[in-house]
Length: 179
Image (cartoon, rainbow, N blue to C red; front, side, top):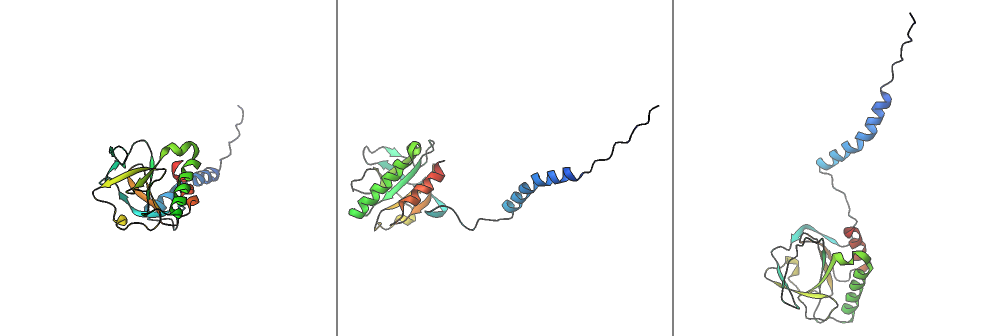
């Protein structure tokens, strides 16, 4: 009979190191998620509305034909609502042009953004909506300069760009949200 050579035992360390390398990020994510950790800052330029304000109770109609319009849509459209001062001076008109350019700069994603002028009789390059009934609390006073509110596809106000906002920040935020 031939003598068999014993097979040396393999160490379990490589397997343990490999398992640790793959499981540790998952365990860290679980601990952070259920431990209540929140990031200290956000990347958005606009003011984040916490908690988001529902626009479901707000009834709106298009100013051009009077047809009903809903803030909740299934086409994945983000809505930019522009509130304008009355009257709209030269600075206001320049801001409207910059916001229009933001839409154009979105390129192929431009069709996923709806631009609406809210409750204003001023001429602008955007379609107008007339809001009937209750409005968000933040809309009690007329704006002194153009301001923009961003509504997500589910019908919630999520970002606000106050008077004097930088359109490049609006473009940056839209670029992140659309993609």
